[in-house]
Length: 183
Image (tube, rainbow, N blue to C red):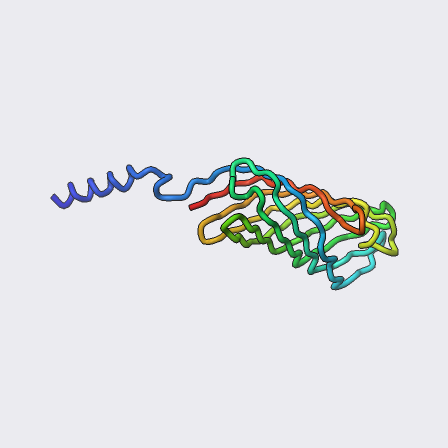
C-alpha cells in the first residue's frame, strides 16, 4: 500500500506542467530614448603610447521606453543608469575611444520598480584631445543587463547610440531585447 501511495505522489508531482511550477519567460523587444544627465567623475588618467586611459565613475543617464513588444508594462517605463566603473582608452592618433563599463540600473514601470546591473562596452569618436569628454562626437554603448523586483525578473541586451544635441545635450535611441518573467 505504501508503494502504491508513493507511486501516485510521484505521478502527480511529475504530471504538474512546468508553467504551473515556474514563471514563464517571455521574449520582448523595446526601444526608447536615453540622455546623459551627469558627466562622469574622473578617477584617474594614465598616459599611454597613443593617448590616455581614463578611469571614470558616476556618469548618469536617464530616459524612457517609448515602445515595447512582448512586455506590455515596459512601454512608458523610465530608465535610470549610473555607471559605477568605466575604463576607456582614448587614442589621439585616430580620435577614437573604446572601453568597458559596469553600472547600476533602475527601470520604473507603471506599478513596479526593478533594480539591477549592467556590463558592457562603449566606443566612439572625439574631436579634441585637450577636451576629451567635452568633444565626444558620437558614442555607442552595448551592454548585457539584468533587473528584478519582487514579482518580475528581466534580462537581455541593450544598444544605445549617442550624439551631441542642442544646448549641450547628449542623447540617442536605446534598443532592448531580452526575456521577462512576471508573476
